[in-house]
Length: 241
Image 1 (cartoon, rainbow, N blue to C red):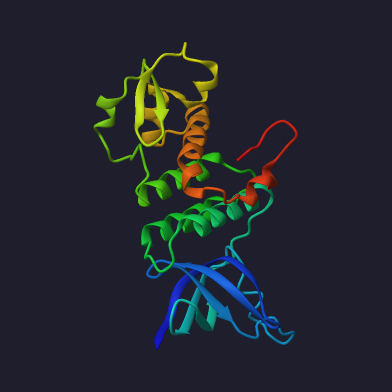
Image 2 (image 1 turned 180 degrees about the horizontal axis):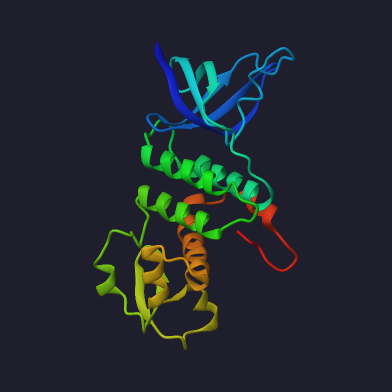
């Protein structure tokens, strides 16, 4: 029988389970992503349902055997993060990414801290894209799929600001020409922009290119699994995120 007491946690997702319970997916720094049964929490007299919401900093306890365990205690720590508009949709997007990409019971203290930081930054009236791009970049690096780590000083010798590079899946970047086929131009990046992405110097060009690059990297990891929160950003002329 495993018993964990008062672990920091945040709710990524929850869904009804049987008549009165929830299955709650949480992220913790020490135990990674896991699913807990919150028994009886959907009963009218339960006051815990309001606590098990996304963007609420929690301490949770659980017990049980195997992969699916039972929630035994939950309490808030600090203030509930108030996200609104596009920032709320962005928070759901981050939650979906981690639901799709993180293995259960794999400790990820760095990702947990980066997620908390991103949620704090999303408490604004207007969405700052650099928050999403920085988190995506860090998440991919922690999962072993990062191409432009901020700490890699050798990148300055790899890329020339005056050249352009084509991204080749499973291979990386190769020198390219802007005269390449138009159908392939979506895979071409300026060396200047790649260096800015590596340094997380978020300007308009580097933000747009980081968005393209992370989509290329995320696509094979997500496979056929859709990211539903992206649909929330859809506008008549473009998809924001």
